[in-house]
Amino acid sequence: MDPQLSHIDDSGKARMVDVGHKPPMRRRATAEGFIRLQPETLELIRRNEIAKGDVLAVARIAGIQAAKETARLIPLCHPLPIDHIDVQAETVDDGIRITATAACVGRTGVEMEAITAATIALVTVYDMCKAVDKSMTIEQVRLVEKTKKEIY
Image (cartoon, rainbow, N blue to C red; front, side, top):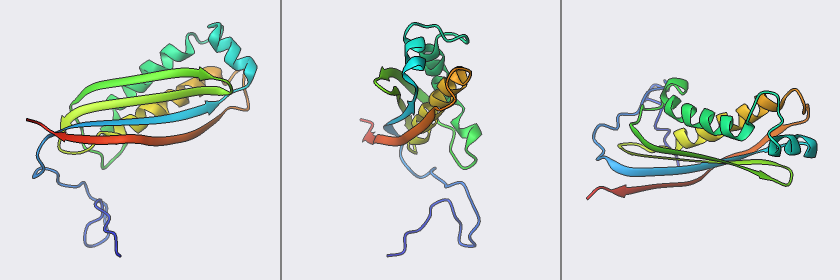
C-alpha cells in the first residue's frame, strides 16, 4: 500500500490542500496533554501562590487564543471560522491535565486547533512555573477525538 500525503504535490513540494469542493460540515475535535510537576509546585498552583498569577486561568485563556491563531502558526493549515473553543485545566496527583475542544462548521477538520490549544496551554503552565520547578515535563499531547456531521 502506498499512502499518499495530501500536503505534497506530484513533484514532492509542500502545498496547501484544496478543500473548496468539500461540503461544509459540523466538525469537532478534542485534544489533551499533560505537564508533570513537583508536588510543591502543584500545591502553589492550588493555593494560587505562583508569582505570575492564576496558572490555570491564564493557561485556559492562552489555549483559547492559540486555537484562534492556528492557521497563522502552521503554514499549511486552513483558517477556520471557529464556533467554539473550550480549554479545561485540571490538577491531578502529579501534574496538570489540559483538555481542549474546538468546533466549527467548515470544509476541513478542526483537530489542529484543538492540538494547538492544548499545547500552548501546557507551555503557558511551564512558563508560569519555571521559576519554581526546574524538572517540569510536557507529555502525552494527543488527539483524543475528531468528528464530523452533515449539516441538515
